[in-house]
Amino acid sequence: MIQKELVCVNCPMGCRISVELEGDQVLSVSGNSCPRGKEYALKECIRPERILTSTVKVNGGVHRVLPVITSKEIPLDMIFDAMEIVKKTEISAPIHEGDVIIHDILNTGADVIASRSMKAVH
Image 1 (cartoon, rainbow, N blue to C red):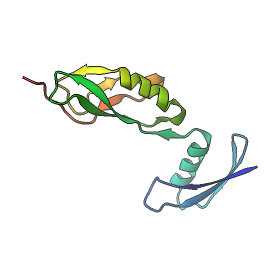
Image 2 (image 1 turned 180 degrees about the horizontal axis):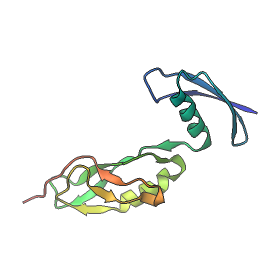
Image 3 (image 1 turned 135 degrees about the vertical axis):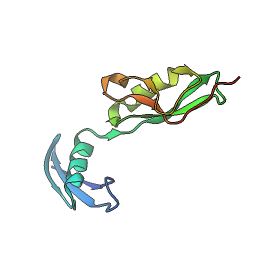
Image 4 (image 1 turned 60 degrees about the horizontal axis):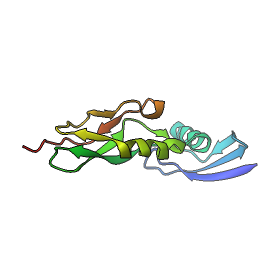
């Protein structure tokens, strides 16, 4: 049996959560003050997910790169593969905040979206 100690990041409480695992099965979760803490611990121990933030190259824009973010968390073990796709992506200005830059990256259901607008160079 393995015991993991986590600090929940779902709310400002920052509960210290203890999780007992046997293989990839969660046996118990304790220390959480709310149900969100238990959900966080289960996900973090079984298949953690993260929001991906990066930049993509822009052609014809006032800046050379545009900040992007995923519309939802993606599995942590897919981050490097997702980054390879993002690194190869080039877009053309103008771009509006919220535009989908990459649809459904790696079939995760998450879109990579523009996190700001960018005007084209005149």
